[in-house]
Image (cartoon, rainbow, N blue to C red; front, side):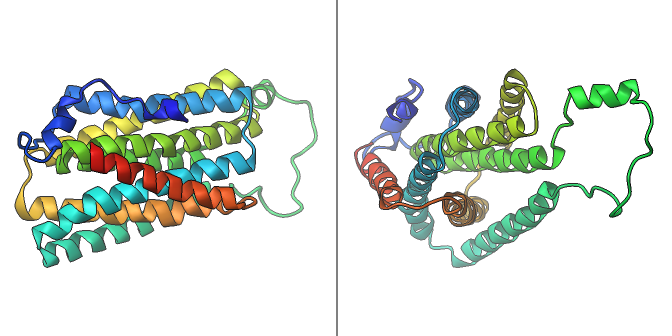
Length: 286
């Protein structure tokens, strides 16, 4: 797990965020790509790990609890104080409300996408006869679970957008959020690869699909930074409040919900507080 905390070598951004340091500015594309590559690469590594040895429910639950604690810490320590300090209640209410509405809408959409397709009318059977070449090919190459892939893709795209919002808020916020999303996407890569393997896809194909999905993180981060670079005042406050609501939704309705699907132990609960404390201390000394 300690390997996940390796950061790209651009520490000048963190120095700019220190008290008394240089004014914090939104980073450019090279810096954003460097930080966005960290969670994207770790997501692919998680898929490869799942192909080598599928983690048990307890290990995955601990990772999800830890990730939830990390994301919650970034929200409480970095984003929330900045939002409160700006003292713009109307913009906060608007941005936060939009964030909740969008995340609930996406939850409904992804839930519909993940529903399995109907098998057809009950009792209906295909006419007997020799198998066609197309049917044999379909049997040899399982169809892609487009509902699952679209749902995962939307999740990753939103994560990338949140990363762009984090860097729009400041270098320190973006850096910590990049590491937090790294842990979340590790779990997502594991889960997606396992589902693809259950559907009959080969190991290399499953890892390749996860790698393709991870590119959506870069796209989302690029959109977030491009739209918000240089934003100030009311616009930035609305966007930060939107990101605040989205990250809280990520913790409560995705990470912790998935973590509680399997068996629970006190060590899993401890992992949440370890993740929170670790990034609380990191935010204080960085």
